[in-house]
Image (cartoon, rainbow, N blue to C red; front, side):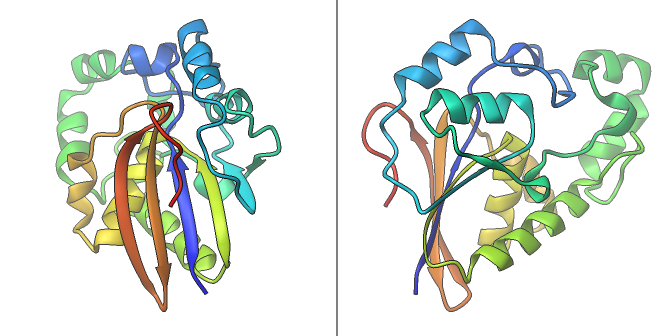
Length: 196
């Protein structure tokens, strides 16, 4: 039995363009919607389609032709508490020590939300549950979820979370059996059919 999961990062929206801590309710912008529609049809058929519960992930899934994507709470992006809706520049100017702590210590949550460490553990639990699912899963998820997947699959320290760049509308694919995952990342949608 082999489980295959293709993680798709969402198309652009104003929050991504402004480096804003998204509040999960911000929709795609016109450019992002058009880019996602242009990539429609480039994913191989899946046995299961899921998404982060955020508006931009659900809208990306719909624009990609994955209208049946089931929002999964465990795949939500990092909860940033009171920083939601603010830009990184705004928070950095108001709370420079808190931002420095947050970036340096994966167990910290100075925003009164979720730590990076907690996000990685949550995504690790989800990966454990999908490991036993035979077939192909497509998951349209926030970039921070993809970062957590990469750290978990590689067995990297949680601090490696910040070392993975995740571009909009790219695919990160994992496949595995017997408790071992293999990783292929950064495939842009639209250039070829995605999904091993």
